[in-house]
Image (tube, rainbow, N blue to C red; front, side):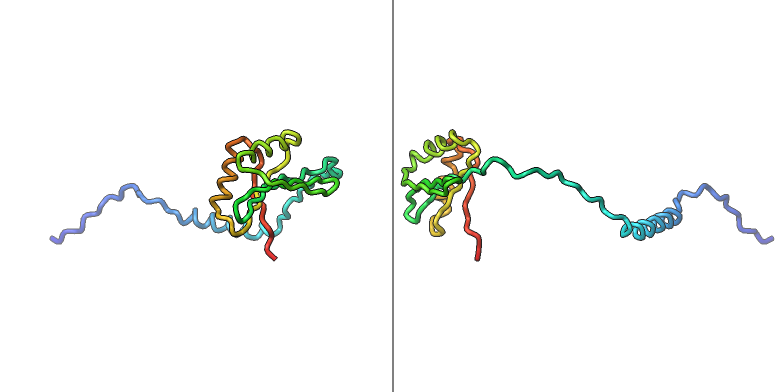
Length: 144
């Protein structure tokens, strides 16, 4: 007698068929690719104001010369007059704070000769910041 192969019972299938999910994702991708160029971005309407009545403050310039001497340069916005005075490093913070007390929003810029060491510029900036001088920045000349 020849024996017949035994039939195995089929158990539950443990795999997930992802093909339908991929089909749905591809259809959604095509829909978004077709509709995206048709959507116009919204325009933002910014509010407008009249010209500012306050004249912007001219900055206080701390000039570091090649020999590392300091000058304090101030400009009058209305008249355009420029005042320049040589100062010692010890009195720099005091003079700048006095000028900022009169006009609190006045920025302070450091203008150094291009041959001055970077360390000297940082020392002046550090001294101003340690003495609570606000709005300290660097003045640069734009390239031609």
